Length: 81
Image (cartoon, rainbow, N blue to C red; front, side, top):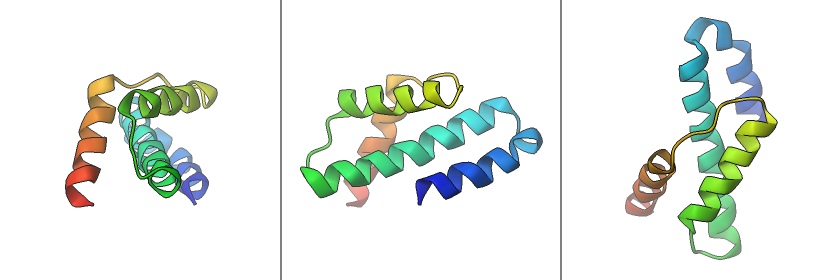
């Protein structure tokens, strides 16, 4: 599911710019990995999430995001869930 979102995002990359593309891709990946962690352990380890998301971003050739970006997303998910 997340791969479809990333594919659609890549299609509009030229229109939204590199920075917005990076942040959107990171948000999609963060959401995907939070859901995966909740299914497996019901426990979100933010540092592990940070490492996994940035590893995936590097694999895609995208610059990494900061820990605070991941922390804010994880905290937002925690409040919503």
